[in-house]
Image 1 (cartoon, rainbow, N blue to C red):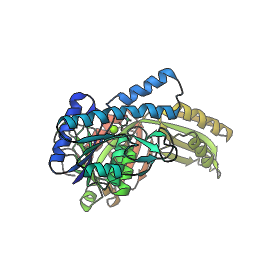
Image 2: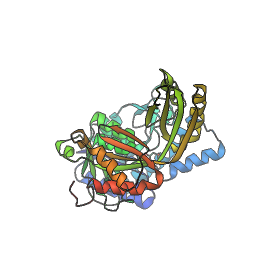
Image 3: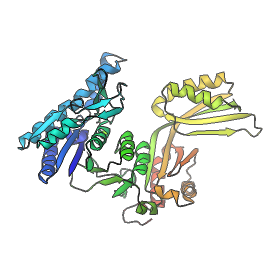
Image 4: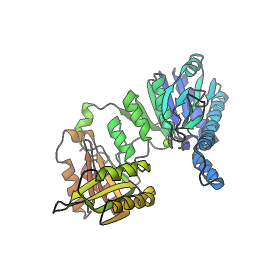
Length: 409
Ligand code: ASP
Ligand code: MG
């Protein structure tokens, strides 16, 4: 088999960990596989570099940031290749650009445009284990070094797996796989054997931090089988794959929460065409990511209230901007709250089962948890609630949908 193995920051955090990674990689190769390894920077390293830059400049240029941040992965790539060689196996370390990862020129969040994988394939055919730096690439036109956004090594791994037609892409991290919910909140949370791309996408973007969202989108689009597993054990992980009939039988697969939410409400806007368009165009131009949006029309039909959520980290910027726009448009008031969190239930089975949302609301109500905002998609129901109820809500829903170990839904 041709296998891509990606090791995250905690898996290459120090010399011991890197040696352990090398052993696993060599073991995999000795079982008769060709192996490509993608590594992250040592855990904490990227943050450290960002911090250094900010000590020097409040507004460091994106181009120089990319050059700086890409160095973290170069270090672990070279060390991992050396560790493999020390075990007596041929290895070659490549930077993202040496591996032919061509991106657009949006520094600090570049998109991969194509991968010219010949060098990797040639090295594999010559008996090398190829170790590639994650998170980085190079622009096609002028050879500028770019990075793919935080957590981007997952994307590097999936993209390379797809480019070289690998049979499997293993993402090694410090957890055993994808859980039905956060085991820190619910100790009975169960590791899933497999999960569909779509569910994983919802879980990833809803705050289950195991896989970077873009990497899941990429895997889904190009049908790359991904396994999330731990580099600290030999436990089998969770397979992220195409939806199948079994998955549909399970109504709710997982419960997620996101505490990084804040809600803005614009009160008494005129109810006429173009108001929402104006507000959200200006907000998008400021690069603010909006999640839930709810509009209510007043009972006399003359005015509208619009509520929406943004990441808590952007609330000051978003509120100031939204308030200014709303005032210009003749709104009565603007308010926000940031003591909230979003709880979601996710499952492809929702497509074929009814009453799932009602069951969620009912269970929250039974525990006195008030719902502030609701949004739904085909395979997800999300509720905004007061942040102090987050853990309780997660436990209650995990139980209600029968997700605990040994339970049958
Ligand atoms: N080192 C980068 C980060 O910390 C990329 C990654 O680890 O995936 O975001
Ligand atoms: Mg990561």
